[in-house]
Image 1: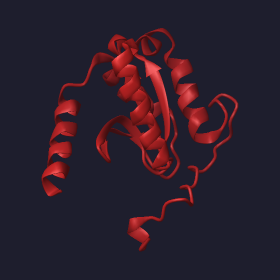
Image 2: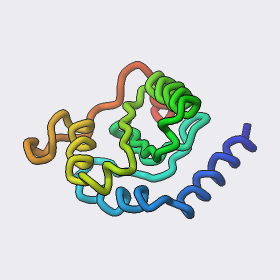
Image 3: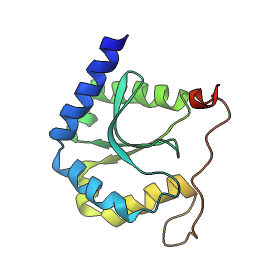
Length: 142
């Protein structure tokens, strides 16, 4: 098991070092979203996957999809990945790479709404959503 964890950590580090332009653009602009009591991380190992971006306290994962994600076999893998992450208590939001260049403000509003239930322009400062009760926290003896 430690070899798998080490592999995932190394893979995440490699992905951070070779980020795509859309990933770099989103990473630069995520600072515009106030995340109360937490922050976003990039290329985060979660179970058997490495999520593009994650707010662990808010249990939110953001995935960026390039054109190859429209291929049937990749779409099926993405659906399995999303179902597994959701079964672990995460919410998954996916964006096409083109959305980042065409409508970054809309992307940021969607992310904010996923965290707080309303677009940033309409919301007041709210705390980070609580963790679902379905899974105990290992750090709290659960």
